[in-house]
Amino acid sequence: MSCLEHVNPRVRGIGVPPLAHLQRLAVHITQEINLGVKKPFKEVIDVSSGDPHKSGMKPISFVRQVLAGCIYPQLLKGNHLPPDASMRAQKLLEVCDGNSVGSYTASSGLLHVKQSIAEFIERRDGISAHTSDIFISAGSQRALMVVVKLLASGEGETPTGVLTPIPCPHTLPMLLDEEGVMLVPYQLIEDQGWAIDLEELNFALKTPRGGYQPRAIYISNPGNPTGNVQDRKSIEEVIGFAARQKLLLLVDEVYQDSVHEKGRQFISYKKVLFEMGKEYSEMVELISFNSLSTACMGECGLRAGYMEAVNIDPQIMQVFDTMLCTDISTPVTGQLALDLMVNPPKPMDASFDVYAKEMFYSWSTLSQNAQRAHEYLNNLPGITCQPAMGGMYIFPRLQLPSQLVHQAKMLEVDGDVIYCQRLLQEEGVFVGPGGLNMRNNADCYIRVCILVPPDTLTDVLARLSSFHRRHWANTSSHPCQNRT
Ligand SMILES: Cc1ncc(COP(=O)(O)O)c(C=O)c1O
Image 1 (tube, protein in one colour):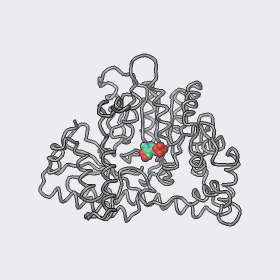
Image 2 (cartoon, helix red, strand yellow):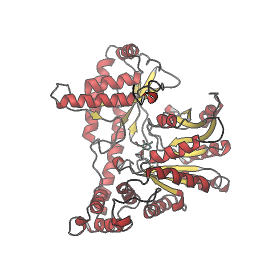
Image 3 (cartoon, helix red, strand yellow):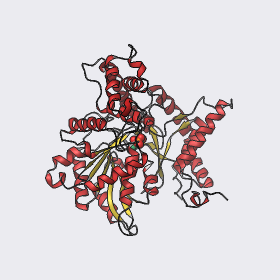
Image 4 (cartoon, helix red, strand yellow):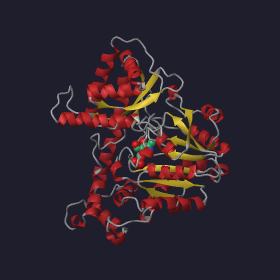
């Protein structure tokens, strides 16, 4: 008998998440290709989640140069690095204990980096920010997990509920479930570009779902996977709702650098909150998350992010610190890269031109890809797709070809999952299952990361089109199978 039998996912009724199953399949297919097994494609392309470097986007040189100097200070002695990169590395080493990236830092991060983050927020919003409100963590998801854990541990028996958008980032339901928090869904409005709607928020609270205490509302802006970017009015509405319902605002703003629709811009929740007057700015509790895993930096593997807490009780802030202590410290290279992200080269610095060119390349690739994918997918039969205003994904809605409906039924899996599985097996393209439409189970969704080199996107779209048209050829519209 296994010592871990008591945590067997099947015993706990969790089951294997579809994405993990598809990830294993992708690895298996790649291994087969490496062993010489013949496939109709040369390699698997993974566009299921937002990992720009994995998809072939290049890191920002300045970040890597400074980190190289920090990791191996011998490099700082000659002319190996641009002079400003060398100087930054020197300066950053001075703020590390023992002048080494190999030492621990305070659990909520290096004070120097927190200061740079506070200055970045002040420049962005025109509102003061304080290092004491900023907590650096090993990725923004880690910080979110700490907050959710704390929310879940409220007094009494009533479970905590977190209002959660549908669709939402694919890792969020698991995170909430793990902490024993109830996901209280609110539907985003698809034909308004996946906008948040006040009526839907009120409806979500009124819908009976057994006893729970709503304590927070989660927002993803720019939206993952929807690509929606909220305007000021929409943000004001959500803040007003949170104030009336006494909900903590958990705002995931990690894609703030990737707004690509003309005329749109990212506005932070904190800025709007402070511009709504004291009634809100001194009362509404807000925690905002940002990350090194943003679109243009894309340094997900360095694992660093931060949260800024506004109007949170100082005693609770101490608990954040204590809980982050269990990690001992966030990877130091990640923290230093965060410093570079929020305090990049300035126009007079030697590295500025290359830095600006590389950042622009990422942003413009994303912008052009978003437009291209939107047009292309909307021209396929049975697919409709909202334009993405920001973020790294496009989120098309599909009517499932009839053959796939039958297979889904036979295998007792959901329609979106079978679509992804067959696309992966037949064309070597790995897209993320995006779930079923909550109000019309006949339709399902897939999630496609569009921050990939343009040639890769061309390949992805061509393979997806070939797969979709092949299965669609003798199909009228058929519903996806209901989720079990
Ligand atoms: C909505 C959302 N939040 C956060 C992250 C990044 O998380 P982390 O900072 O832990 O890498 C992602 C990355 O894909 C994301 O999509």
